[in-house]
Structure formats: C-alpha cells, structure tokens
Image 1 (cartoon, helix red, strand yellow):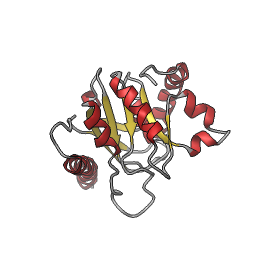
Image 2 (tube, rainbow, N blue to C red; image 1 turned 180 degrees about the horizontal axis):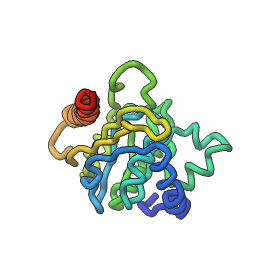
Image 3 (tube, rainbow, N blue to C red; image 1 turned 45 degrees about the vertical axis):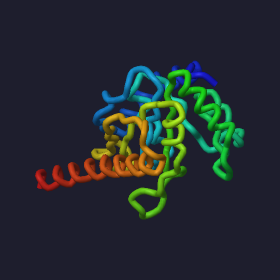
Image 4 (spheres, rainbow, N blue to C red; image 1 turned 90 degrees about the vertical axis):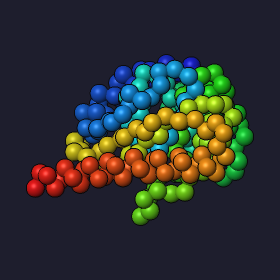
Length: 206
C-alpha cells in the first residue's frame, strides 16, 4: 500500500468539506503545524465518528486512517472505507497486516491517521489509556507525530467544537513507554487548553 490517495477521497473531500464546515462550524487551531511533506502520524482523542473530518478538511495531504474491520465487514460501509484509503484493523488481535500497510504508507512518505485510545470514548473518563501503535510506528519509520485534541460536541452550528494541534515531535531516542506518555500528556494538554479558553470566554461574556 502506498501513500497515493484514491480518487474517491479527493472527490469526497471537495464535496464534504464545505458542507461539514457549514453544518458543524468547527474551530481549528494550529493546523498550519501539519507538515506539507514527509512521513507523519496525525493522532488525538476520539469522540465521534466524524473526528477524522476535522483533520481531513484542514490539510491538502491525503490521510490514510486506521479503521476498525467492522466497517469493512459491513456491506453498507465496506465500499466507502475501502475507497477512502482507510486501513482495516482487527482490534481483537495484533493485526500484523494492518501494521504492514501502515508502515508501507509511512515509508513512502505518506500520512497515517490514528486514534490511540483505540475506540471512541463513550465513558466519563477524560481520556482512555493510549495503545502503543502510534509510537511503535513512529519509532520504526522515524515519522513525525502531530497531536490534536478535540473538545465539545457535534451539533448544528456549534459554537465550541474545537480541534487544537500541538507541536510536531519525533520519538527518536525515547523508549516506547516514554513516548506514549508524552503523547498522552500532549493530547490531554491540548484538550485542557481548549476547555480552559472556552471557560474564560464564557466568563468574559457574562
């Protein structure tokens, strides 16, 4: 699998981007930090099925998102996820095939999208524990990690749906444990910053 983006991805982005922005009114802070070239992993917290659109609509790069295999098993969604360049991941086991495809994209200088929590966070926890997939891929390919934190809810003309990007970093000489902790802390910090700014804004308005 290479970094080339399927034609349906390009067409879908042209059609979906303006509609998504019009309906949800998302705020994007720091998306200019996304490198225009080179192997990258775009990663952050997972709140909603549409989280990936927040990044897809803010970069000209094609992003190959890792998606659960259930989307590929369903006749209703299989064709869409396949033609959008997503990589199927079997979450019930260590999916070597998915890892191989992601490594191919990164080694070809492409972009991979990941949610380290491994699933949408439907709990009361601020963040779920992070799996090691992101930092492992970064370590093996020297890819740059770009973090993001998503806050608020998806609703029509939202006034607080925000995605905030952090400063890119590389794993390099860090252990996987150190890198994963850094990743977790950075995503948490980005989320907390957006929530703090929203709270300050609300106070000032009152």
